Length: 218
Ligand code: SAM
Image (cartoon, rainbow, N blue to C red):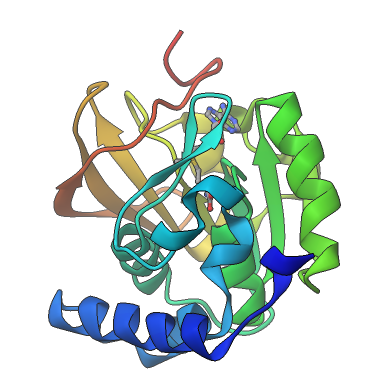
């Protein structure tokens, strides 16, 4: 229970993290406010608790990571979330990114490929008041039964843009996805302008764990 306390110390550390994110160029106040509201240390194993407000990725078990706060802030800013948006997240992991999206008023559907992480996070998020829809499966294929989505965020590195995900974007919808090799990926934003026209914008390089599955890595 101790780890679910949000103390003055943690709140102060969170304000420090927000300052760091501003210094690194994050300007979206709605995103920064969500990061300030969600206690990142809730998502950490007790052995790593003291690192929760460092701007770094950390292990969450099963060989996976909770993304670096800068990466979460950057991807979320690119999405330009509006309250009520139907959002699909690929790679639930710890649930931290899903919590940020929920805090911004999105209706979140999140898919995880790893059964242990899926079960753990599905049970954990409601305990801290985060209500999102959880799915276990291959997110590289999206979630056709709930499509179309206003926003899609992929939080693992893909070898290419999965066609199935593009097909599940509404008109005006946006997908933010890191694409590249297994070590380094470029952040892309794809906006569906019409049925046939997709605007592609390229941003900085990042380093994600691999997206597995049919339209991911083997
Ligand atoms: N968004 C997460 C968070 O806030 O903690 C961090 C995600 S972690 C960097 C990437 C996650 O993607 C891992 O949990 C991994 O198991 C998952 N993953 C990899 N391939 C996947 C796939 N095809 N479908 C769904 N999840 C996948």
